[in-house]
Image 1 (cartoon, rainbow, N blue to C red):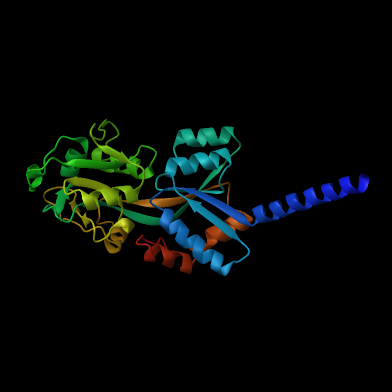
Image 2 (cartoon, rainbow, N blue to C red):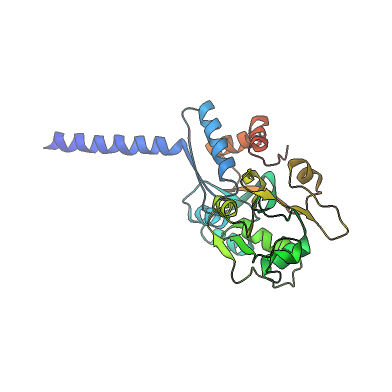
Length: 283
């Protein structure tokens, strides 16, 4: 009986040790849907070069990623916005010290169906459309069709950024909100799919999601400004008016395996993947 119990205990210890070893060589990354394709591309290439390491990447939105970091259920949060003061306060209450790493830049593309004749809009017109003040395409040079407004859901960093920079035009006193009838979709891909199948729809997402099934809108600061294409060169130069930084957040400065992965994302190869996935490198 004693030997049997001893063997069981040894077996359990071996299993726990094996799990711990596996766990020590794995990284859980969660957050921004805008960044999920980039994160998965990094992870795939990193694991090819580091066969003993495992990196899991899932989306869910910037807020979800930061909540997971704060709750200790992920190692790295991907975010397309800065962490909020209330999130920092909550993190510190839980013994988490969010550390911010700017990893890339992104231009937010405004997209319509290819059949839509509208190809350029000012920020004022975009604000009017997404708040519902402009409700028919004929008001901005299009067909006599009701505009279908698409947005990311409120937990998305993309939603927050677009509201602050386009609807509210960075006015801290503005209270503008998305049109009451706006369809809130769970991912950038969902917006892409809806725009592809709906000639009246307009939406927005990271420019890495642009495909031939959607048409991007050239955007101008105002009627007297040039209309700018959402591409890498215009984001780097600062000409494109709807662009933003992308971040990774860790608990304190990265150490060990997490530092190894973060260093990879900032390496020449990692920043090359940024370009390949249609984002803008910071190096």
